[in-house]
Length: 112
Image (cartoon, rainbow, N blue to C red; front, side, top):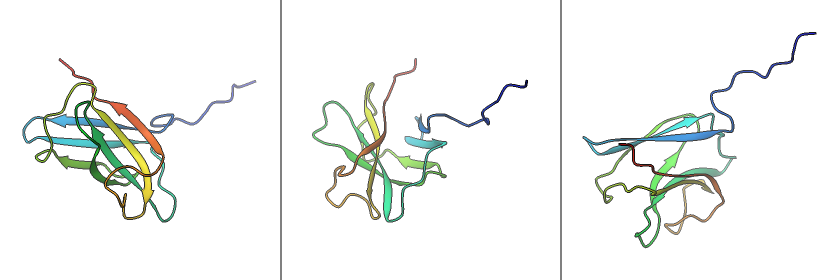
């Protein structure tokens, strides 16, 4: 009797990957099987280093598109810096910080 196989998936569970380039200073957010936001809601990308007073929005993201973010307006990335994606109203958080549930979360790791 043949064994039952699961279909191949890009990534399970769904997740995102971040990659940084030094010149120019950019961060690329790449969806790996991420799920789309429900109707009238948006996925919002945030970051916060340990010594920052609060999170900073890096923009709204689509589950089927990469996001390229210029880092000119932020301090240098730090080891252990928090990155998260929250579910927000369609236009994004109305108060400048996350208001919805955290759907994806991770920390920066210094690669030498």
